[in-house]
Image (cartoon, rainbow, N blue to C red; front, side, top):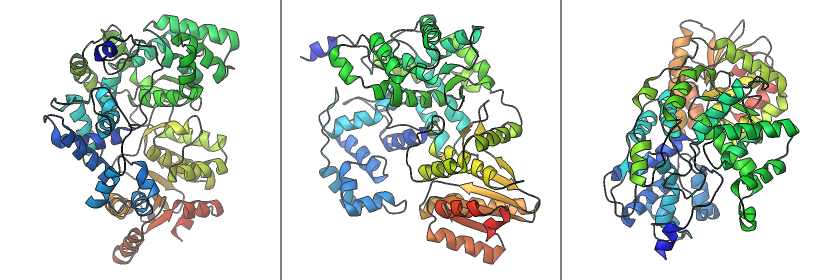
Length: 525
């Protein structure tokens, strides 16, 4: 039976990245749970220790947690932790009805589903009865995030290194579709740019369903298919139209038509595809997320990748694939972006554009969504990670609500002026100035005492002391979904002890305030 399973012919399936590991920080937090056991032979006991730690850190939350009131309260709290007895209870009452090849039914198989994507990306390799291995790129990613301040440039380089090698038919997947998704995308983008009939905007969002279902690495055929569709219906095609084309590409049987959902091929899989491509730093959004394109500041990297990696070999064994994808390409890591020394004008222009195109109410709603961890339905905004989205939306809100206010966000941007990463350490998230006052605005999704006091208030105090040397009439504002009581008290203490104005706002109070005021100084009241 096992021999039959091994020899079963692979089927064509849509490319689908796991949403369990949506952002690099989450991947690293899981890798940190595995790190103490590096080079040890993977056993059930080690798996349970890793699972225990993942639950303790609230990285993995079984259903029983939300169904048990006292556990649900701990889950929602950034400060409270599960006791050892509670974790034992969670594990005992959470039988995992799951089976993965090579792993026993239950928690062993759940472990595999959690770590499968980091393994596909070449960060780690494991198998029952074999040593756990973390690759060079895996350690680079861990180091980039575990430092005092995340090294966003290094994180992008690690993901670029992985995605330029990642194969849809890698040995961890049984997929008859065979290509390198990033390479295929770059090649098609180049062909579209060379086409005088096209507008240079890139690949239309709904066309990405084709990429997810494309059977091979023939970029020209895919480009011609896109041209055929555009010449037939322009950009007016529906998800249903694309879905039928994709089912044909997949050669879907009647049974598969029921398994391959429209919502997956034209929705979730497309969104996750865009997110993964953007982790590389070389892909930009155009037209409010309706198109994806080259990041013009990364042409040197793109040329290098296409020259070196367009020709590739498929790997039969997991070991060979791991050695390949987990190896660092020193050249790509060392390559610098052609980012202008000063992107101030671009950032401000983009803010003004969005402030004009979105209503105040739309921005308020999106701010509430990101603070409540509710998914956005906006084409572009939903593709931005939560912390990045919060800085962007807050900046837009400040432009919309205060006249004659200079708003300068410090997040990094792509060539479209859209944020790619949060403001780096040592800078305020957003600097706002009028003729009277300067305000340093810090925003965070963290609500716990530890996070707000140590990660926010203390750095805010340091920034404020430095800025007041240049501009005496400077104050700071902290915006979070919820403000911890200790955060308020420490802000009051700094006012009493050092005459520093740090004003904490939960998101509800902040929005009420900016709705009815027109001077930045009003935030001091």
